[in-house]
Image 1 (cartoon, rainbow, N blue to C red):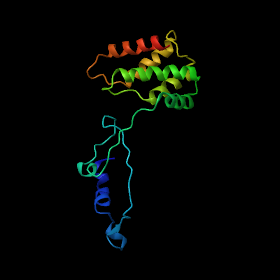
Image 2 (cartoon, one colour; image 1 turned 45 degrees about the vertical axis):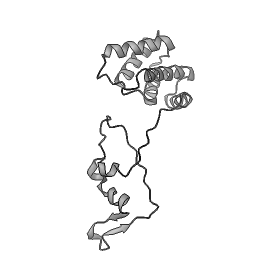
Image 3 (cartoon, rainbow, N blue to C red; image 1 turned 60 degrees about the horizontal axis):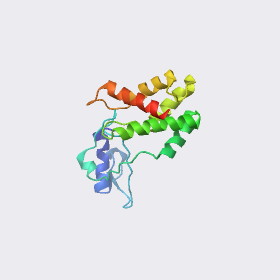
Image 4 (cartoon, rainbow, N blue to C red; image 1 turned 180 degrees about the vertical axis):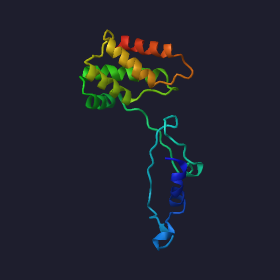
Length: 169
């Protein structure tokens, strides 16, 4: 949310007071329980629709960056969400993990990309094979859009994806 919407949280976190509108006919604030804690979640700043938190609010937070899921978890999630054979899911997940390991500095694909590829495979009837043109094109379209290309040429990314498909499938 926008920084202005979070201003109410400053007094709650720092002073343990929640300001209330005066029109209610009661005291202008409520005391917050001393044991009150809040958990905030957010996407990285480069995502569309993500607003940078105010410094005053960020000073009262601890940021914990989460790592990607392990391979078995990514396979289980993708299998459950995509509805394709696990043997195909394993290949898709391995392609994405290899692409992620190749460049740790760019915007890297997540399990969401594996789910998207899996769903397209299910709808199109394609299989995780380097000879399946539909599969290869789905991987190129989805993974290319999930990869930051600021300092790299699109052809390099596509070449890397095609190479991974050939190696893994």
